[in-house]
Length: 407
Image 1: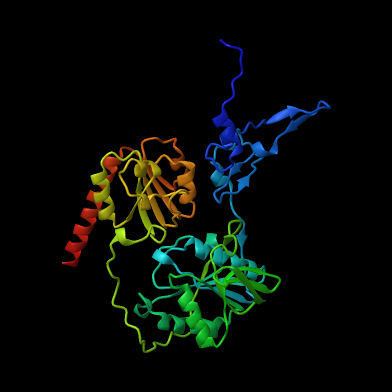
Image 2: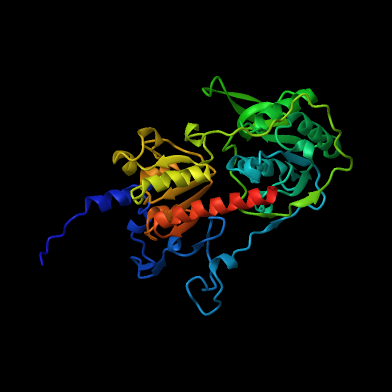
């Protein structure tokens, strides 16, 4: 063999690029080495494991290295401290959007901001209207949970919800009200509530510091700084979500019922919308196809059956299977879907950047070691055609059963 040492430019580029999925694998990390004075040094960065909340933990018992002190998993060793407020001095009320019945990333940011305002003496009170599917209020910083249920709060009912918030205000007298300044209900509800209270809210707030709130103004080109008001409509990424503590999420109830108001708005129910007409940047459910999709007709039928918006990787677009306006990624469209299904997409760095804000990612792929599988919250290893066909049959069976029950 030749004694010439050859360089790998691609490996060197990956080692410099911190955004590349293989960046960590290219880093040479020594566990220990001998220092210049003969003392053995240890590298603390190679010790530990990633806990269930994404924070690196160090287990000195030896269990995580396979020691004899225990065989439990690393996730079982980590127990977040419980944050308790037995007798709150005051409340910070949060009204999450709960799109789809679950906390969104915007809602979690809002709860993180509320936790910082509550401190150690106050309690975060979450006010949720109607039925929900959320099971992790405790892990997102909720100290007290108030569920306001009833048919009058279903659908689009801002006037009735304002009446509910006024009842909460009369009973708990929160120090601050926090609502998401969003298009999914929080922005309108917060402004209606402010009008009934006769207070001027702080809108599009992205930072609270030293008793001052900073909100976006001038089409996002300027900041409006004012004294912290009682009613705050916060923007996304206004604070870091709660990740270091568990909370009690104790249920509370209204002492009196909510007065039913004579609504001037009648909700006629949802309107069917063609998923193909929804812009990908605004869609909440996207199914994207990549190089691993061999039957595109089946892909289109599966997407239509699921009622999802179609997307594609750059390879699928370059090969002519999908139009250019359906390309997802840094070189296409950045998406913020609540559910993103990647079918036959290996996970190039540009594509992973484009789906970075998606809540849940489902990967369907034949390669269990690809980067998309590593990014996904749920992975399905298998042939995409068989899996898509099974999805179509499952949806058909579900709808047929629903029709029989309705009859």
